[in-house]
Amino acid sequence: MTHKSTQKIRQILWIALLFSVFLGLILSNTSLLSGFENREQLVLTGHIFQLLAALALYRSELAINQHALTITQANANVDLHATADELSLQKKRLTGIIETAIDGIVTVDKMQKIVVINPAAATMFGYTVEALQHESLDLVIPSRHRKNHGEHVNNFGATGATKRRMGSSFEDFYVTGLRADGTEFPIEASISSSLENGERFYTVIFRDITERKIAKDKLAQYHTQLSQLSTALQSIREEERKHIARELHDDLGQLLAALRMDLSLLQRDSLLTEKTQKTVRSMDQLILTSITTLRRIASDLRPRALDEGGLFYALKTLQKDFSNRHQIDCELIADEEQLTLDDAHSTAIFRVIQESLTNVARHAVASEVQIEFQRDASSISFSIRDNGRGIDEEDMKKTRSFGLVGMRERIKAMHGEFTVTSTLGEGTHLEIKLPLSTSTDAQ
Ligand SMILES: Nc1ncnc2c1ncn2[C@@H]1O[C@H](COP(=O)(O)OP(=O)(O)O)[C@@H](O)[C@H]1O
Ligand SMILES: [Mg+2]
Image (cartoon, rainbow, N blue to C red):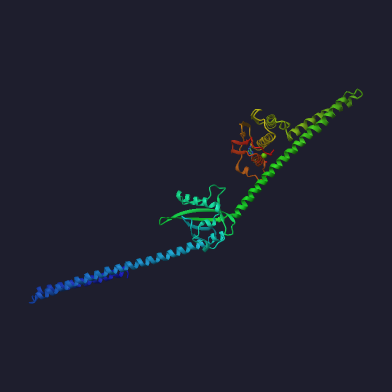
């Protein structure tokens, strides 16, 4: 019954009471006015009516109060049912999610006993849900990892963290799972813990990342191969340059020198007419120019100084040529002793600086460039700093530009570090650090 109908009953009862009181009063008072003899009897009757009315009122109030209690109980029952329905719906929903999740979900208690496991998890491990339910989690962890894993989970519970990825760093971000057939597979997992009635439970959500790991390994392998290919190509190119430069310088250069000697002998011949003498002089001039050009080409291909441990002189020449050719002030802060290095280091440093200066000339619009060296027992560091326009982000993404990429690869092949810092409008700063002890075949 509703609150409204209770109110109505109350109203009717109150009206009944008023009527009884009214009747009582009339009966007791009319006797006064009319002067009846049995007045006392009438007054008594009036009082009795009043008493009856009060009694009726008391009883009805009692009834109403009992009734209200029943209603409250009934309402509470209805609420309870609704909550239970809602709860079972939520449970159904949650079970549905867990059952159909692609990721594996496992909940274990503090003894590592499996409390909940979804079909995806069971399938990943090659079991049925029933086979793993109530089993120890150790069943799906390779024996050599069990101790570590247990400690990891306990440690996780002890730190009080509610959620975090398993595995200590990005590289070993995964844990290893053990299938029913004994094969192992990499797992990426996240763990959370909860406290239920004072007991701790851990839920691990995970996925099999075999495919991803294979792809990642393949990519890393491909990248290593590419780096090795680039190093090999650079090395071949350097060898070819060295070879051609030597051929030009030694063979062709000597031939031209011999030709020049012959010409000078011819010039001394008194039988030659003045006209022939003039032609011979002109030929000599041409041969001289050819020798100079040949030396320049040979040196551009590969400075001789590099093969004689003279990186300092090779860089000095590069610096002077650069300043003269591009009208950019170029400073070299280094000394000969610092730059006495083996062939591999000399060549790599020379090529990196050569490419950097080419970039300054082609792109920087700079007025100054500074090359500075520092060396200690185990490494050599150098930087190339210009005051040009700087490299913007889009420049870095140019797919057909291999200058910076080539430098980076060359340095990486020698286990060095290569950093480019650039501020737009303020210039570019390349910093390179090369270890000296590591032997390498890179050139
Ligand atoms: N010193 C520099 N100052 C300004 N921009 C530069 C500098 N060095 C490189 N860049 C920019 O970075 C790009 C990539 O350089 P790089 O890899 O050497 O390729 P490339 O010189 O063949 O274009 C260049 O095209 C240029 O836009
Ligand atoms: Mg370049």
